[in-house]
Amino acid sequence: MREISGDPGESIDRLAAFLKNQGIQLVYNEKIAPALGMSYGGRIAILPGQSKAEEFSTLVHEAAHEMLHKAERRTATTKTVRETEAEAIAFVVGKAVGLVTGTASADYIQLYHGNASLLAESLEVIQQTASIILAALEPAAEQDEAVEQATEEKPELAEVA
Image 1 (tube, rainbow, N blue to C red):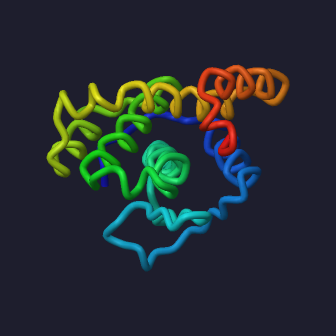
Image 2: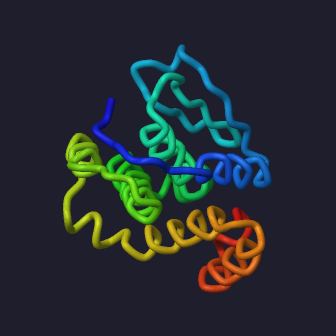
């Protein structure tokens, strides 16, 4: 398990609702072990038994794959780029909701041979995708406005949000 701690509060439920609204099914499946999560294009599987902080981080990581890596972008990027982007988004969103990630994200990115220059090349897409996810975590009254604002800044992600 990754060394992630903290309490994501209602963020897991809000993220799950956001994914459901996007037509992405969320299931819990112990058969994906040793993976903590898997993205299948329209379906995310999460390994049960993770702490709430780990589960949230894993769910954000897989949501990022769903948002970024299931269309033409999948063939236009390497696995290293896709994993670096998804984990960087999980890091940004996790920090924003108050999780303590230690070196978990850096360790994961290094596992896939990601590095600072690769991260720099993806910063714009990381920021925009993290913004859409963070907007979806806002309380319902603020959510529509935040999602609308985030997708106005990046129209091609609007179909996901």
